[in-house]
Amino acid sequence: MAAGEQPGTRSSPPRTSGLFLLVLAVILSDQMLAASAQGMSIGINYGQIADNLPSPARVSRLLRSMQISKVKLYDADQNVLSAFLDTGVEFVVGIGNENVSAMVDPAAAQAWVQQHVRPYLPSARITCITVGNEVFKGNDTALKANLLPAMQSVYQAVVALGLQGQVNVTTAHSLDIMGSSYPPSAGAFQPDVVPYIQPLLNFLSMASSPFLINCYPYFAYKADPGSVPLEYVLFQPNAGVTDPNTKLNYDNMLYAQIDSVYAAMQALGHTDVDVKISETGWPSRGDPDEAGATPEYAGIYIGNLLRRIEMKQGTPLRPSSPIDVYVFALFNENLKPGPASERNYGLFYPDGTPVYNVGLRGYLPPMDESKSARKVVPLLSLIAIASIILILS
Image (tube, rainbow, N blue to C red):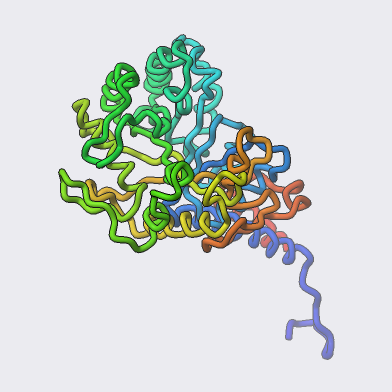
């Protein structure tokens, strides 16, 4: 009993002690979320073609609670990057197709990197810039011709800022650039794409940047559900397909697609460029003529893919190189054009409810909490504040 304290009475704790505990809780909450973001090697595409998505601050909490370590954007949204400062989450940022031709000008590329990348480093872990998306899938010959010069200008800007080795420069391709993908060892690019791809591969090799490809086994199943075995595209047990040239057995279509890209690059003289999957997914809903677009199949595809990623599994051609995958997508995006499937690739509805269960449980804070969201402050600063409060108490 403290001196002067009357028997039968109890002194009230100073009010500042409660404030100290509150600050301490804030410290632990943010730091645990930041630490958890280092846990999973899965990447996710964060598209925003919608009018009902949660704020970036809320999405930041959701992804970190899910232990997502890598996020790919289709732009360089400053609100998103600011919401992830000091979280440890890696970012791929993008330059849209509409801005690619402007990037041919070195001054414009320098200005873009100065404005959209440099201010956020190192607090935001921007590790890659994609210049355009699926450029060779379209018919814009001027855009196709400008792609590599734009990439070179952006790379020169990265080098000028001393960021080479920290920030890669590349572009993402549609699998439609492949003229042949079966068997995987006979993979070859479309003849009309080769004049563009050959020098692009030379650039990627020089810059030590990856070749990004968007692969959707769902498209193959949708096009011919009667001939494409569902088990083969969903990573379910099946006899697989054996490549007659390499004798390698493939038990799923995604790995066969990846290795066909490696074969196509090798045919052009490159074995020194890594292939990464910039998009893959399965829609949970589609139009009547879109076979297989169901929550059940989407859950099986994504769930089995995540298990393969966590096993750090490689393809039959490169078994010691774990697949590097960005799942498409985080949310259903209600403003995307095209068939119904395009608006239903999300793992989550905009309110944070899972579209299907694959074991990715996350916490999306309520809107009120988001409005009062605090800026992430370095741990030592918060500890210092808490210490002062404790002393004053």
